[in-house]
Amino acid sequence: MGPGVDKPTYLHLRDKGHSFEDNNSVTLSKKNICALKGTYVDIPCTYTVNGYSVQSKEWYRTQTSGGWGRDLRTDPEYKTRVKYDDWNCELRIKSLRLSDSGVYNIRFKTWNSDWISGPSGVKLSVSDLLVKVTTEVEWFVKLTCSITCSPYPRLQYDWYKNGYFERSSSDSILLHKDTSWDDGSYFCSVRNQKNIRSPEVCIGQKCWSITYSHENICALRGSSVDLSCSYTYPAWHTVTTTLWFNTEQYWVEPTDLSLDEDYEGRVEFRGDKKSDCTLRIRDLRESDARNYKFRFLTNQEGGKYSAKTGVSLSITDLKVEIKDNSWRRTLTCKTSCSLSNNPTFIWYKNGQPYRTYGNTQTIYLSNTADGSYSCAVKEFEGLRSPAVYPPKNTRASINSSGEIVEGSPVTLICSSDANPPVHTYTWYKKNGAEPSPMGSGQNFSITNISSEDSGQYYCKAKNILGPENSTLITIDVLCE
Image (cartoon, rainbow, N blue to C red):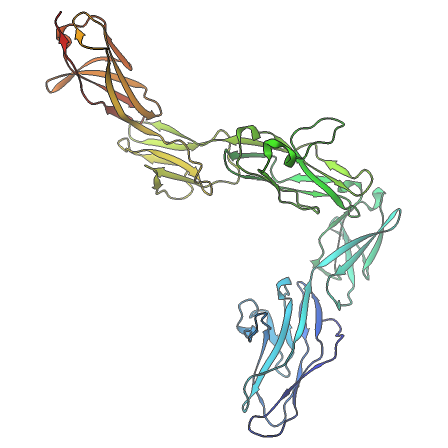
């Protein structure tokens, strides 16, 4: 496809069994070929072999590191898209890709020779269709359907406006720049092949837009988030400035977020000055829960735009919610807002991964299950929820400055580490095999202690995940 511009390459073969040179040759009539993505290309090749028949032939792609490339018919990237002509050595590659750009060569052998390959090959360049926009005069723009490689094929094109066929032309059309008549999105395609087309370009005042992928985003405190968006503008404009902001004042240009000391080192513009306006914020804080907007300026008078709406960002932590009934316990990884991007939840027991099946935001345990449990979100495993666990390190102590004498007041104190916090404390006095309940509450007071109160005491701390008893403490009441 496309005319050649260089002299043919001839390949000469020498018969190893004779001292004279046979007139064997291969002719590659084109050294440079330009073709369109999605079409096919024929790389012309002919050969003359005197005296010996060609036993095998292979086309291959020249390796940048040297050495011989793989036969295209066995290469997974090519084997369903290439065809060799049975009568000569012409190569056809179908469904061309941009990655097919490269140098191609042929090698072959006769029954009386080794593999022989030419000193050079054919350079193939694969291009997309693009619409080039130029200002012809003050009121007109010229749209040209172009190809980035050369020598480019001579083609006829169809032009489409807002998805509908507009007209056919050789390669260019002329439009009014500032009238609503020609406002719209345009693309070109190869004549009668709408699937082989350029990206769209926008003409007119209706081209100004900013589109946010999500207008409401919920993210974890300490994580990173991408505020994804795209933007459009008239095709003859060139973007000069892009910025994100979260504080807006009328008649005052907003401040670029990257210059705000609260975001220093935490924001990164990952878009470009063409169509992508994605912003990334790292190490999210509660104070980052704001509304964010994108704005851009161009090289034309009046060329500035920001949408009325923006992205509302909410920040949340993870928390394990517990529900208990008579036969099982339910643990759910909860957030204050619905996390974006359908996250995968991960569970931990005693700090180690806890096996679950599928994307499990909720797990079910028996009422007798012990241990501590926490949850996280995949890719942010370091941002775990606080662990939930039954009481541990439960301890009873006596609030007394010295010996306990009859008639003095004594207070027993129960302490325990638990999450959720302990909701019930119960005190017991050990009387033989069966302890006697004495009272409830974290503190148990005896206002007028007597010798009958002497003995061993302990407390039981309990939360929704279970109870734990303290060790025994001994009260020895002395007579006055």
